[in-house]
Image 1 (cartoon, rainbow, N blue to C red):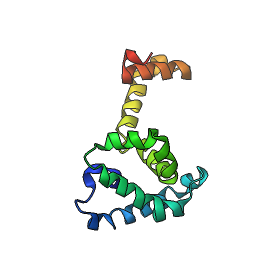
Image 2 (cartoon, helix red, strand yellow; image 1 turned 90 degrees about the vertical axis):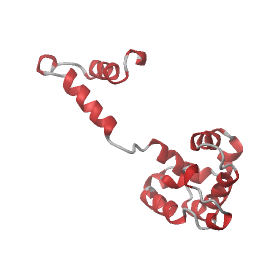
Image 3 (cartoon, helix red, strand yellow; image 1 turned 180 degrees about the vertical axis):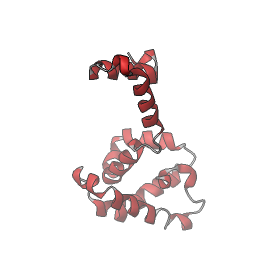
Length: 139
């Protein structure tokens, strides 16, 4: 996943030629089933879109990773040009990098659904957990 971060880009165009090829292939292989289900053409990612995307990133290397992702996901021309690799980027952006949020959820559920409140309906439990985890602004 680090391959898509702007700070990891190489400093020279010579190093850019081979940058990230193995990592992108590994990510494609790992998420192959999901990518195919989304209609992704895996060969296009490694053969044409990844080289073009890393060149685009290199030209815009002064931008932050957040700004680059926002541009890639909102600019219609870029969405068409990088259609397949953006499916991989979208997966990477939503996959949690740690289980901390799950642990917070389990802790909140243990606090809320005690023996005294074991008959809470799922909808009410969900609302109470959202308030407990995120605060009142959720509502």
